Figure 1 (tube, rainbow, N blue to C red):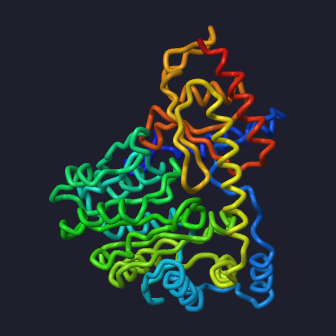
Figure 2: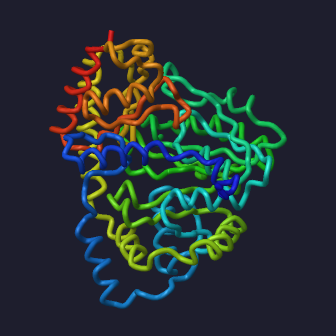
Figure 3: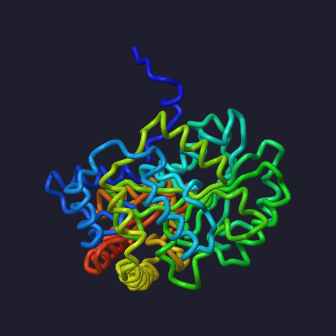
Length: 397
């Protein structure tokens, strides 16, 4: 007999992690698979950051850290917010957690009561939906389409807000679409939120340093909304530090204190060595992030050119992050005589089995007509992957 809680039964398995695991399993069997499913820079952590971590071990940073993070790290993050985002968060308003995902669930659990509505914008990052379910909130999904560059319109947001709306999760640059909101587009949405007292915003800015056009804008930079925004960021994407598991928030003091209280019961603090590495990342201000961004820009141009040559893929050129999110519905109903494609998940399984390329179906992102490709891979891998996909897709009639 199974005694699992209803809470765990209600959760879905992360489709991005599941596909990454399938790719790894095939590789372990000796199958040549190109993995474009995982949201991880293919660069290594810069050497100066690694050296800071090694020094931390020698300096005996091996004891329990403070729950919200070391004071000097929180001070450095406070200075980073002011320097890069023009956001005035004191160190007491900063909480360091085990990755951006942990930061988000901390805030959701701190603000959302059972039955409260949380607005998310489809396509959305896969974990938003299930984190809301975990908090016993009600996800309210607003759909956007490729025809509007997957961007939310102010009138859509206004229509979705009710008296039970407690939170909206906003993400720019976007995972999975790579779209970036301009300041004027963001302000239009902020003005809608401003009218609804008691509605808060999680602004997920984890891809801040991978923006290709214009300047990254923070939702909390609008003075009239500052007190209702929780800014989430971290070192994973911009500094190639996914495995170090360091995210952080800047938030109104009462929310930061609530998150600190919650984290004190969940994890105590997060890895002491990782925190020292993160301190180096946000203070050294080297050019490693810029170099990675420039590399991703070149890869974006490469893969978009290759994908435009694949019949049936409708794409929009992403303005940030390292994903392309093609609409692939033209393949639905087609078959190679053995496999019939019913949806995007069928298509990515077909491409994994027949093309040996691992991608992620759009259903988990709230966009079942699309698939996600990560171009955090070498030029050679991207060229080979697109060639394999083109060959496999040509067999579908």
